[in-house]
Amino acid sequence: MKCLFLFAGIITSAFCLTPVVTAADPAPAAAAVKAEEKVVTGTLSVTKNEDDAVASAKIASDDVAYNIVLDENGKKLAKDMEDKKVTVTGTVETKEVKDDESETGKKTELWLTVKSFSAVVEKEKSSDSEE
Image 1: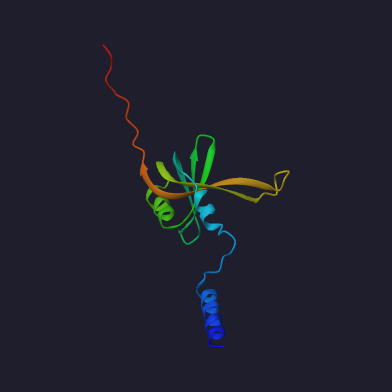
Image 2: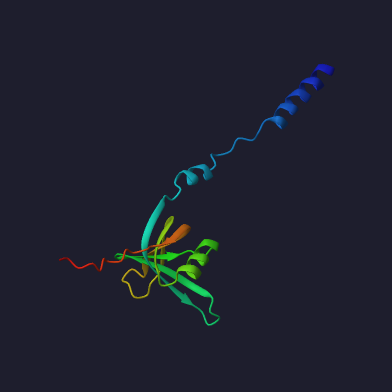
């Protein structure tokens, strides 16, 4: 009889100490699909609200507009570089938003999360005349 209780104790301990096996966690797969960094150069435009706080910011680069995510770095970019030509390194995410003017009722926007930025210094043309 003691053997039966001992055996039951061993089996119970084994079940209690064995980790529960569940379906694969999707988080590692999502991390593998991480957005790549992109470098964008363009002119930064900033919209402010009535309290003079930044409401939105966009970078116009060629024919593409990137909305700036207004986290800490995005707000710093908007404050420091308003109406300047900038180069921004960050990650781009595509979002579909409601658009009453389009046939589908949706439009795609690009959102740039700022990692770093700098002002673009354009070279001045030489004023030397050729002789």
